[in-house]
View 1 (cartoon, rainbow, N blue to C red):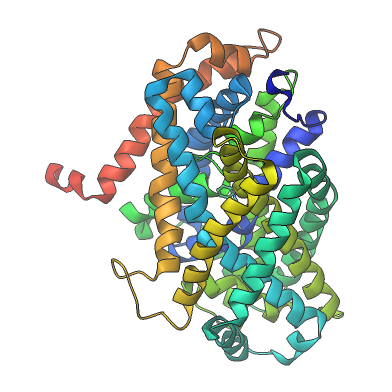
View 2: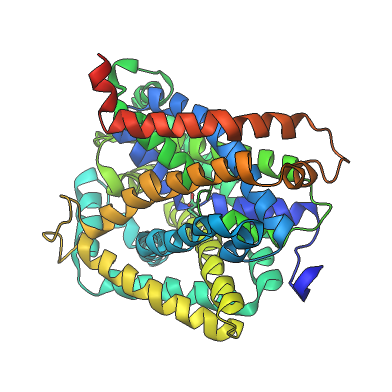
Length: 451
Ligand code: PHE
């Protein structure tokens, strides 16, 4: 292997680290709140469409770019084509924007873990008290920042321990456990009074609620949830072995990621309708809804502690993947030791995260384009920066990158059937760019002239 870089273990490891990056707060915290704001059922269908038509091809493209070059995101695009190096830089700026608010929500997860372990969660028995818990905590100037900092330092520690040990180990055991806990919570939530209303909201499409924004949000959520459109999957694929099957890896990641999101919806929406929370409550939705489910369970302290612990771990495997993009870039391109590089990255994201945390509480009044800094980072990354990265990637890989590279990577130099390569290539050339452009233009209102 070139450059003596670390590589990951077998096939399972490639799937695990990629799924570890994909599955996280995006599935369990962001997906339900975005689906809730965008009408539920119809959103789910459009979202699945986005995953298949945009997610799968772009994921395969990024895997190919990463594994064929064995370089950090910027180095990878640069070595394929100098002109397209900017995609690498886009993939480098994005992690700062994502981590800026992602670390804040990760901090909330830690706080809820502590509230669960200490048994305080048992005091919160109505939607009003749950809401009060959430707002009191997030409005506090220092507590959320303290939890955020703890989460940043945990991520930093894993990064410094190195790729192989740190990332692979943490992903291996806990993801299946999270899955099981989600299934149990979904069963509990669905059997709450009126839970069925929530299932209807989530699974019965009401297309009258679909607007241009629904498409933008579904597309943004697809990119965000799959960790594509930025340097994460490129960087991870640079550690994949030559015999890793990119086709099955990508398919597995997509299926797992979707399953977790759908399960999260089946946990959240029945409870939302059962206890009368607004599905449009935004970022607080999941944090306000979950305690209502735990409250109906025996051993609630155990369940809520287990849940928030596993959610924290899922968030961690995602923050690691984002931090890794920055650390490898800094260490390879600025010729810095890995430890020092990790500190530089940590310093940068800490500033962003503190500002985002304050913008949810004491600095709520300071807005940019009518959004708090937190909300701005959230929608800027998912709805603009990542899809633009995906747009440029599909044009570059579909039209300008040496076609052999894509074919060799997707088929493992001819060992695997070429069907998926052919479909991916057509999707990257025609479908992805056109669809992405159409969604952007639709949202800018440009199609109104045609009416
Ligand atoms: N996909 C992760 C999640 O769903 C978040 C993420 C976004 C991670 C972008 C890496 C890159 O939680």
